Image (cartoon, rainbow, N blue to C red):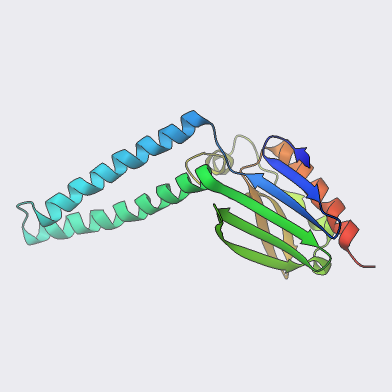
Length: 187
């Protein structure tokens, strides 16, 4: 097995090649996210208490209900991100027929498949962003899943993978995928 940086491993199995991209973060960031989830859940419990057990009039209950809707949305997002950081992995499998990407939390996840023959190796590229731009800073924040750092074009759509990779890792990943695609492409 070949490693590319700290988070990427590549293995050639003969008739297919697999890449595994880990989503692990440092322990202190994981602890900070868990603390955030506990505090956010406590706030939601307080809102629920006031909605169902508090002495609120009709208009106040409506306001608390609307706040709970926003709370539930952000609770879902942070729990999903925490699970992604704790147990998430991107599996990429490339063979002569298909280029598959599975973004999984443990073993659960959706597989997206593309035809290897339709992917141009030269169109596999890493995203170039200004390191000081707001979008780059937000995309690299550990409390969100972020967008992929490498992409290719399939039927006019860009397919992104390699979430929150450093620029040198994404360059190496794109280079390796171009090599693998050239290997499996039919002439």
